[in-house]
Image 1 (tube, rainbow, N blue to C red):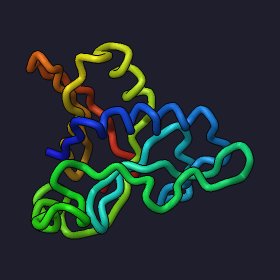
Image 2 (cartoon, one colour):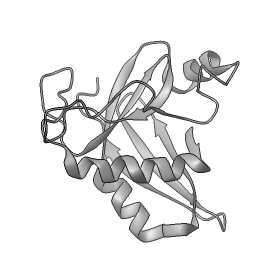
Image 3 (cartoon, rainbow, N blue to C red):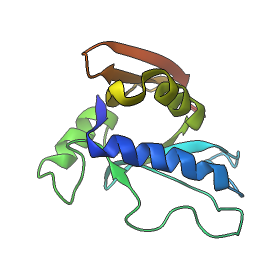
Image 4 (cartoon, rainbow, N blue to C red):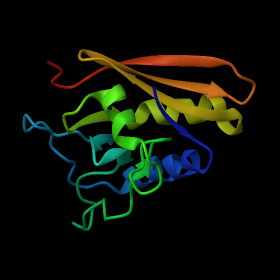
Length: 147
C-alpha cells in the first residue's frame, strides 16, 4: 500500500489547487489527454507530481516538485527500491489519478485526514484514506490503459 502522510497531505492539497491553472494537460502513453489529474509516477521512487503546462505555457512540474510516498523516496529511504518492487513491480510507469477524488476527499474529511493510500493491481487501483480517528474508506478508480 502506497501511503502519503503528515506534511505531504498539505502538499497534495496545494498540488490539486495548482491544477486550477492548468492549460495544456499531459498525455498518456496512448496519446490521450489526462486533464485535471495528478500523476502517480513509479520509477526512481514512487511519487505524485503535476504534468502538462499552465495557462501561460510553462511546465507545471519542475525538478523537486515530487511528493514522495512514505518509504519510497530514494533520497531518504534506504530500502525504497525493494519497497517499490513490492508495491508496483520493477517496471517504471505512470498512473493518472483524477483530482476530483482528492477534492471530494478534502471536502469530506477536512482536517481529520491522517493518510491517503493507493492500492494497485494490474487492472485497477483504490484511493483510500484514513481519518485521525482511525476510520478508513476507499474509492475505486479504473486505471487508464490497464493491461
